[in-house]
Image 1 (cartoon, rainbow over the protein chains, first blue to last red):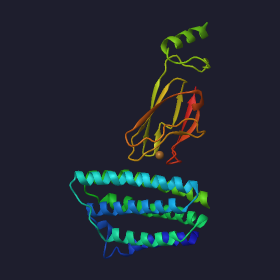
Image 2: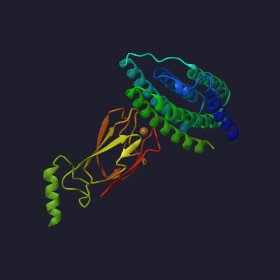
Image 3: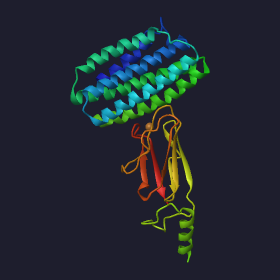
Image 4: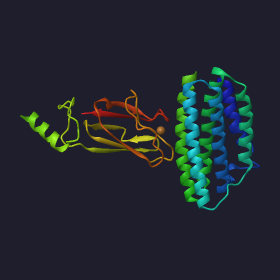
Length: 175
Length: 113
Ligand SMILES: [Cu+2]
């Protein structure tokens, strides 16, 4: 399982790095970056709903509810800021590749039950938050031009880093 | 003699406070007010020394909701959304560790002097 998850995380990062020649995440504009963040938030909310439906582990339920609560709060802030700036998020290659990856994982996770699901969900949450935090911290924040968008992403990064830490604790609990 | 003075002060300055069952040795003459900011997933300060009868106010300055909840389960601010705050008067049972139920790695302690 550990090996599988490591491969999973590596595959996720590689799929983003692999397209860097043609499609460079560092070249996305603010509105494309906002779109990626919105998609990334919604993906984690979908994983959480799946966890609430399948898992019977109270720690997994608490974590999933926190993911829904926090990612919804961040999305509301993002939408409010975009409305204020009178801007629409723009779909792009990275949003699409995140979405495709998520569809595959949701299909895979949906087939699991019991402890196997809990382990997969916890490890995927850790890998997912790590990958997103790396992207947000090292690629998005240095490239965002609008100061308000940048500060929202900085706040978002702190939230996702807390989630990463929380996911680490949860991985420890289900192993 | 000193005990009587403290008692009189206590009764006059906190008339509304019920003295029944209150440990006078632990009571403080003038109730103080403390603020704990919840910022960047931390309780600031994360340790506080208080007296019974003081008031602690938790203020959530993050975008996401938090709580301050006793590890032992005997007190709770309940959910504090962005910009919300909650004040609790310090009672004997509040000494010890507390955490955020939504983000269990967030921890704080209250010490009753
Ligand atoms: Cu919290």
